[in-house]
Length: 217
Image (cartoon, rainbow, N blue to C red; front, side, top):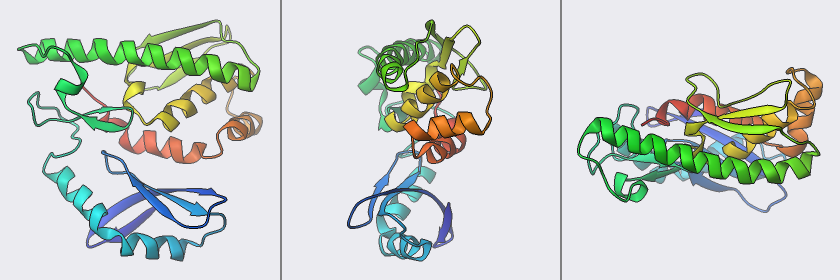
């Protein structure tokens, strides 16, 4: 969903739940998440966004000045990299920072691959029990097109960049691929199954589609 505030096109998603009031979360790459009571009308959401525009516009303006996340990286102390949906400096991710850009990229690739392997191993194990399925294997790959795959042999792959995403989006990808063990296509039965374990899966799809370009090294 989008709203224009002071000439800025603001992208936001809504998570509805049994709650009393609307709250807001901002992600480093520019996604605004509203947590709202059930059946809150769009007009009320937009009214809330406009009344809380100051931190939103501050975020968008900082993105323009490379204070937050950029697509094309500059490997200096000012650059930010995503990790679990949060902005991190190189020194937050690497114990030692190599001298050349090539070596920094290699070190970051190693870091994200390791963390994605650890995270997916833990969350796959958890959701296998929840969904009632069992994967044959889990492999971390460098894929330019997909966040995850599942084949007919129940072999799962996950993109090494997945650990850059917010935890809820990581869980969505894992749920998606595990549900393919039951439904190898994307028919209605598949999406009903995914939705039964992730009620906000459409928001997580939109998040990855819009902000995946920022998840780079």
